[in-house]
Amino acid sequence: VLTSPLGAGALPGAPYSLRVLQEGHSTPHPDGTLRADGSVTLIRGGPHTLLVDTGGPWDRLRLLELLANEGLSPDDVTHVVCTHGHSDHVGNINLFPAAILVVGFDVSRGEGWYQPNALANGRPYVLQPGFLEVVATPGHTLAHVSVVVRGTAAGTAVVAGDLFEREGDEEEWRALSEDAAKQEESRRWALAVADVIVPGHGPPFRVVREWGEGRAGDDEDGGGPGGRGETPRGGGTPEEE
Image 1 (cartoon, rainbow, N blue to C red):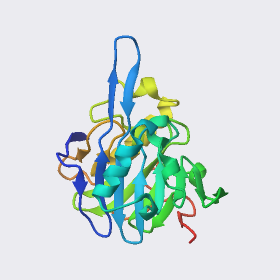
Image 2 (tube, one colour; image 1 turned 90 degrees about the vertical axis):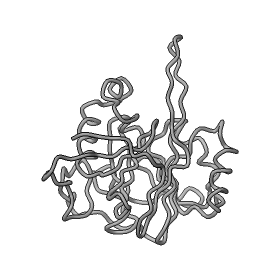
Image 3 (cartoon, rainbow, N blue to C red; image 1 turned 90 degrees about the horizontal axis):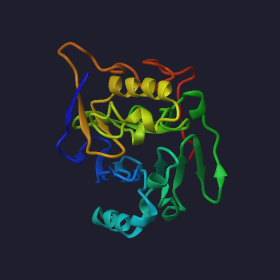
């Protein structure tokens, strides 16, 4: 599987469109420190408005401005999905007390009401069947998740957090992984199902397949790395309203 730059930060779609509000970055320095901030992605359309990752707390005002540029306030966001618990991804989650919060494998709403889900068992947390779901993609952290968006103008998009640092990160992701074997499996799954990947610290990129090489899941919905091309046992359960 090959990749190429997408060249755009927005993907129209039906029912959901996707826009990268903030393109993540990561810059190592000679003293061994690393300056980084995560990508922030808005998914809207249908009954849900999602923010995937919130960046670091040092950019709180910038995040509010980015939302305002889209005609949104924090109260308009129905779901916040934090792909994992690092500070450059969860730093502004407190701006969204009214949203359903998905942080790794935990789902909560309101004043600390945690909801049952099966992400830890490899089953997706389905927001809209056939179009929008959160899937477990462990490796970078053991409870890492990604968001799958179907029906964009470029096909299926996977908002992948730090499952992928950036396009062409093959020489660096292992050093940042809690479980490299699990992450490699999760990465293979994402490359098999996605037409576009939004990484945690770089611009979106396309997944380019050879002629005749189909995308996994073209004829089925749901599933994550644990299922390897199959909907996990029992399938995913849509969220309870």
